[in-house]
Image (cartoon, rainbow, N blue to C red; front, top):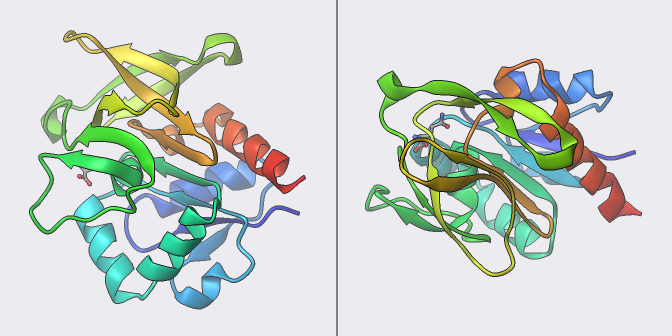
Length: 197
Ligand code: GLN
């Protein structure tokens, strides 16, 4: 049985937990170091990347999580979570850090401010189409050679990847947890199951 966690320090934790439950998983809320015990995979939710980063440090979760990510644990970062996985943050705060694991450059708030939030259908090839909710979303501006782009969106200034994968690491700019569509979480859980085989 897969043991998937949702980092539960700040952000839309409840929505991720509900989506995973809809898929039949029993997610674990990860708040402290003991919650990492025996974890097979983790979702880092949307919210505020600087706040989550700060709480990761103060909770003591940062170092053990960094080791688990470096050791290949599957992790899916959505929105702020994507920023926390990225190797490069553009327009970040000076003291902002990340796990620097997913080889992408992301621009914080690259699609504009809160008031510029939008929802568009996102096409994931033969997997289908999902509603993409973008809220102060990071824009992926560069991907390393090992990154596969699963979906892109052109918001009027050229195509940018919005759902990417690099081995066990997944990232998306939008919020799949804010709609009733479970497709994206399902893809991650399938990959998690696969990795455990
Ligand atoms: N702009 C936010 C940040 O930098 C992310 C927004 C979100 O997760 N909805 O953390």
